[in-house]
Image (cartoon, rainbow, N blue to C red; front, side, top):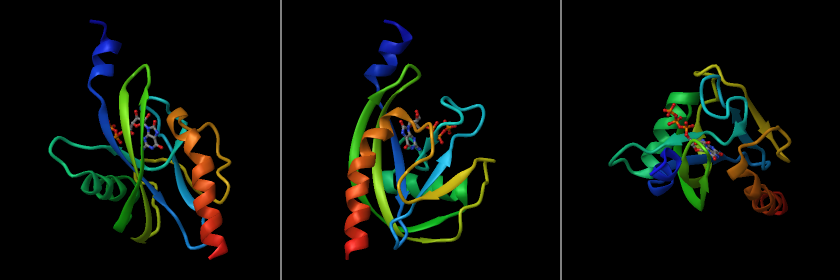
Length: 142
Ligand SMILES: Nc1nc2c([nH]c(=O)n2[C@@H]2O[C@H](COP(=O)(O)OP(=O)(O)OP(=O)(O)O)[C@@H](O)[C@H]2O)c(=O)[nH]1
């Protein structure tokens, strides 16, 4: 079996968080050098460790990468994607409740965006933007 086929058989769970401010702006981060797809923009998050709860993984990644303490987050949607380097199962959460301001603890750039305009964005994340736009519209209309 090729390496790619082996990876495709075992999806890696990834916890991803969309921090949404009251005005609808969301936080994006740029993947640091040395990681696959370096320089691409993503919603912050990372791989779930063996035996770890997905929400716990989300909270851990936000503390490690950005120094943010997520107080609560709601599961939003799941996306499965096969990259050349990995087969990922992305678990997206939306959070309106966190403590702290983002810090660049891994040397990464980050940006608050209304309409997400940073480029390039990780391929698996692009299709979600139109759905996210609907949520942001709802928030602004409320
Ligand atoms: N955080 C995040 N990861 C995403 C998104 N979209 C997407 O395809 N991914 C993929 O999910 C995987 C996340 O793994 P990662 O390498 O960032 O995880 P990590 O921080 O635990 O890295 P590490 O292996 O260096 O500890 C990557 O394959 C990445 O390409 C997204 O919007 N946010």
